Amino acid sequence: MADKTVRLHNKSDKPDNVVERENDVLDRCEAIEAQLPSWLRGFFMYLKTGVLPMTRLSYLSDVKFFFSYLINETELKERCDDIRKIQPEDLDKIKSVDVNIFIDYCRRYKKKDSEGNTVVYENSNSALSHKKSSVSVLFKYLYRDGFVSTNITDGFDPIRMPKAGEREIKALQDNEVMVMLDAVTEGTGLTPHELHYWEKTRYRDKLILLLLVTYGLRLSELQQLNISSFNFDRGEFKIYRKRGKESIMPINRTITDAFSDYVNKERPSEDQLDDANKDALLLSLQGARLTDRQIRQIVKKYTSISLGTSREMGYSPHKLRATAATSLIARGNSIYDVQELLDHDNVTTTQLYAAHKLNTKRELIKNFEWGEDLKKEDE
Image (cartoon, rainbow, N blue to C red; front, side, top):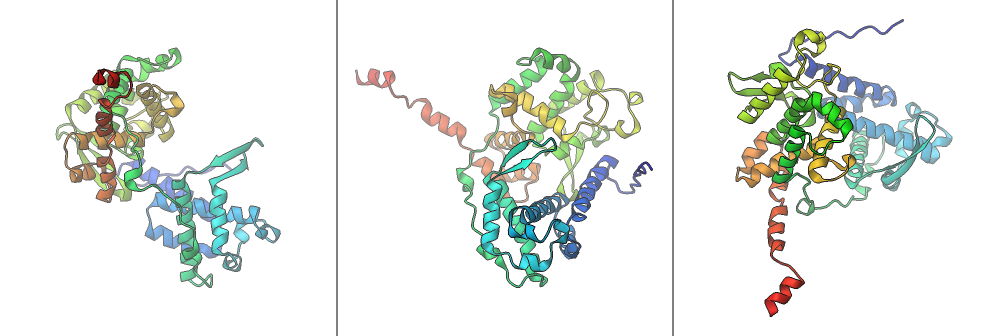
């Protein structure tokens, strides 16, 4: 029997595509929960009511990975062949050192793909820290609700992370932004194959890049935009942030022109689109809403041209968010205004971009040469 179609009955003021995306995340959470022991229902409810849906999905994914590790890499595999069969008493035997060994295992591990090939996975300190946090949340819950006899989380080894001021922010400089925009406007730096598609998508791609570097939008906020999100009479457009928050963004002349070029010169008319995509702003050549992956590829392509590097080394949409932040702060805008625009929960996040001193360092070194110039000064 064929799967029944899921119908959306949306009585909220959110667009259908935003509700559908949120529902997809919830479905993915429930799918993982079905693969975990049923006695963890209280933990599932704790995550459902305590954290954002994407954070919940991330925690559940990490817990599933931890349980898979236990039955594949530890002595638990001798008595348990399915993570759904893991019992509280199995977890009560786990010590802090076992979790520390798990985190070390996560630094680099091997796994077979669907075709039987061995794939080597390597995690950054940030990813390791997130996995440690997920396991910590699990064991704190287990101890609180009496599933384990001791709270082992205090014995987890710290993961050394760079201090905020030590981390170099990866963002385009203003001149690199202009090279990127020239590339999407004129097609410079593109291969013959890429030029073929650029002829059909140049206005769409330019709008994508301008929205990212102007407003510092998150990828999900950009991907969910609709034609109806924009109100040019009021000079504003609406986006949906984390936690379901609505935010109104002002429209400037650059965005107005780019939007008009795309809609009038390139985007298919409504009668060419199916009902699900009539309102979607950013469309593929097949007339469907662009996916996150497709947007990432577009951004990587044009940023790689501005950076003079390979397509694989191009920047992600998040680094164009960083570009917007550093450019706004460099122009003398208030750090608190930039925090509001980018929707940072804490101003310390915005301060990371304010501490981006690359231009200052370049100025310091610019006239500090060694070699022939020094010899001339001595003569």
